[in-house]
Amino acid sequence: MKVEQLTAKILENNPNMDRYQLALAVAKRADQLLNGAKSKISVKAKNIKPADLALMELAEGLVVVDGFTQE
Image (cartoon, rainbow, N blue to C red; front, side):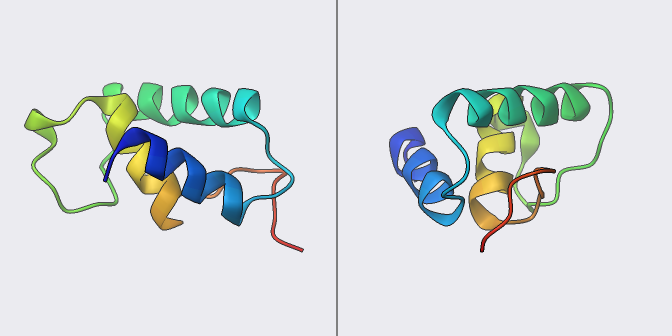
């Protein structure tokens, strides 16, 4: 799935989140992945950038962003 599609999916599922907040969430998760956190998606992480992997995890709902809930 393309970055634009993943971004749209995340923002659609989290109406209280804007693009700036999404960028912060992706950056935080990517930093966690770079520091040794295990991915929650079963893909070969060597071929995927940490930011893209973080975006995929957020789009699938595998990572929860504190403060943004569906209501």
